[in-house]
Length: 156
Image 1: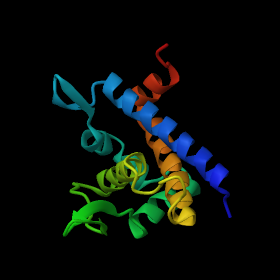
Image 2: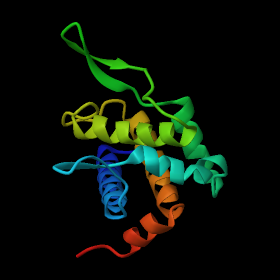
Image 3: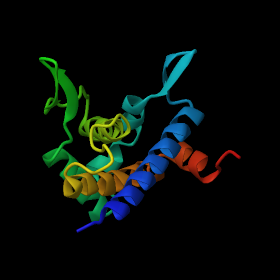
């Protein structure tokens, strides 16, 4: 079982990798939104790395994808004035987009306080989502030549 300190390290690694990946998407022009509020275009990115999901590069990536598909993270919602969780899946055009949107959901739940308030809620599940999300992020970066190049050539 992972200790809270180890889980904190997983969370940091996940945030670090997610932020770096999102920067790379923007750096290579995978953008949506307005000029005053550009956002990473995860949908277009998913379409461009669909091969990673159709033919995962290794067993670890395949297992991570399957975990997200069979145990998708829920979305925190407000229901009758009370915080609750919705199992509704995000809109998606492909399995690749679904999985990447679920990885984004993990980031949002973590960042916006849905999983942590000084102590971890359901630490075993949180660890699985963070660890497997890292595997997916690393696989899709390697699966896109421009994003991989941006990732390798960090801006200082």
